[in-house]
Length: 175
Image 1 (tube, helix red, strand yellow):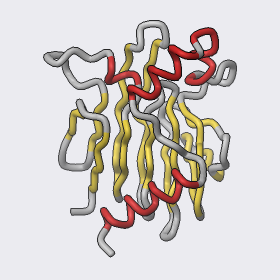
Image 2: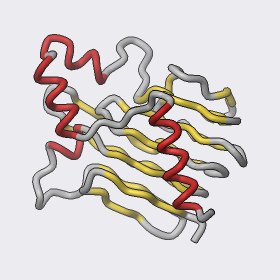
Image 3: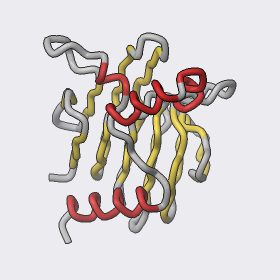
Image 4: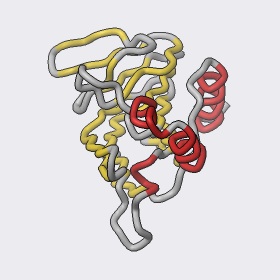
């Protein structure tokens, strides 16, 4: 099975396990329907997290500087955290704006930059794919981007920088 099939299978398995990625339209519709609680759907107040681990399969480690901790469902992900997956491991992470990141087996990804302003839906995401592959389903940040503006979501690899304007992208740094 090739790496893309494995990543798609992992994303599908994590989605079935409860890490459902909403489209921008669905997120906007949900927010409009539940306006008083819209920010509560996207922001976890108080602990400075930029994202939340939604589903973990296998051995997944979060590295912050010299500190290593096991990724657990509901756990915080912060800017500069490195997500490292084992050989048969996957993880999905939901960022505050609704962006969902699926990390495949044998991968290392750093949340290099994350900035999101819920009121204006403005912000930036930079993910650094050090090895392996990932899938990103964008959230509210890309919704507020005019067509001629620079991409608000970027994925860097050892050899390239990818600006994401769409809603779903798969990046493989091993090829």
